[in-house]
Length: 287
Image (cartoon, rainbow, N blue to C red; front, side):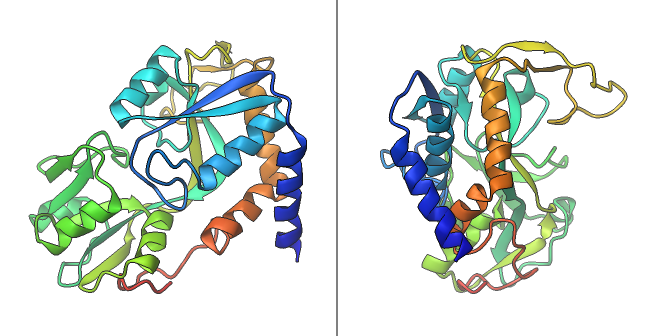
């Protein structure tokens, strides 16, 4: 009942906020990443509901731009696009965006054929001479091992990757666990299996907010520790507290604490996005 009540509150909150004093531009690639977002031009999904509610609470209008990912990243670099809804951290990206926790959790896992060796780390792919399927510009899990055989395609989605696995045109694909399980429930894949021992533990999901956005001002981060690796919480420049981007950051944290983001997760995932599913299962749609 609590979850139903929270969903009802979401609808009332979204309906009651109709005046918009600013525009927040969210950019995303054209391919789908359900349950987060449908294929362009359909923007519906968890991302849209989450960020539309946040924008409305700020008194802003949410605008969504769908283009190939390299164009979206260029828009973030210039400040024409304010944020990317779910973006993995790396040192190059932190030069153009600030990473803000969006209240969701994620982890990347692997999928391959049932007859493939068990993979617990990407180095195992090199040892077994396996080919990793990867979208051009996709998340690299903090760095890919040397001598790894990679087949890259522009905007490779789950369906395309799993087809290549079935056709033995690649051996392993790494992607967000929630997206994989959502897809497999609708499209069972006999002969494939999830390998959840690879590739990382659950962790907060971040959005990337453009450092050139008109909604952001920056200042030196007094808590930055140069002896530690760069991370979303350890960067030399931070968002200034009086900017709209900082209010956006604070609001998402409040929405998480209120249980609104968890309620959205139940609506789109059918379970809490923070609930860890079984460690390994065949790609048959079971969870």
